[in-house]
Amino acid sequence: MTPPSIHEGKFPIRFWLGLILVGMAWVLNWGLEGLRTHWLFFPQWLGYCLVVDGWVYQRRGTSLIHRGIIRYAGLFLLSIPVWWLFEALNLVTRNWSYLGRESFTDLEYFLLSSLSFSTVIPAVFGTAELLLTVDWIRNLKGRWNRQLGRNLLIALCAGGGVMLVLMLVFPLVFFPFMWLSVFFIVDPLNALRDRPSLLRQIASGHLSNAAAYGLGALVCGFFWEMWNIYAYPKWIYSIPYLEVLHVFEMPLAGYGGYIPFGWELFSVGVVAGVIKGRQSQ
Image (cartoon, rainbow, N blue to C red):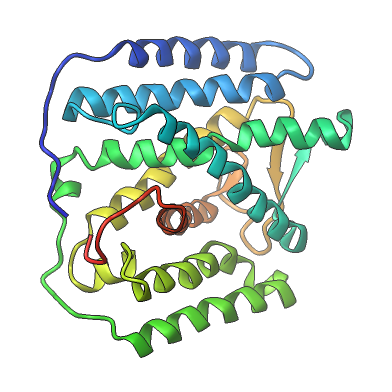
């Protein structure tokens, strides 16, 4: 993939609008009493998305929004079913739950949760693009160049399926596979269909996307957990064997799951046609 050029222009209006949204929602979310986060989560994270997109535009002269507002809006729609998939998997692992859920009807919970979930992919993809404006990430390469053959890719895909089954059957032991199984199922399939694949990029020594999307999800994870700490409704964790050294509500080891989560989102974005290109990209 050709590294993006650095532009260093002016910040667009959406950057400043995003800062205002983040600031207002942050103050209200941490300052008000009672139920409030179900209305404030979306504007706060919409503000975050506008900030990172505007920052990318200032750095590169292009961004997700600049390249197409309708396509960008599609990221919000794609994000809803993707995160509901992880909510469905969590019905088995029970790694997190929501305080305040009882205050909403099933329909209210579904609609308000879907609105909040819609910000996940735009936030991670925007952060990944911002990280790709950093020299060492944009130019990150390994000193190897190997190819993944068809048989190995099929084996990796099957391995992802085995991870998923193990997680569903033995969730107390294999719950970390939630953050690996989807990637190892979808990414090899992308490679087999000659689509962008992180596994093939890593094998050939191209590490920038793997670093940007993994770290992008980790950066978002930090803000998700930080803003959640004084929120209500909010989520809490129950993670076997890892309930030590908490950073906000999340055990420190749990943050490791954000990196492969970012890879999963990349792979799903390829399937959805949001991320395009040749297999080497």
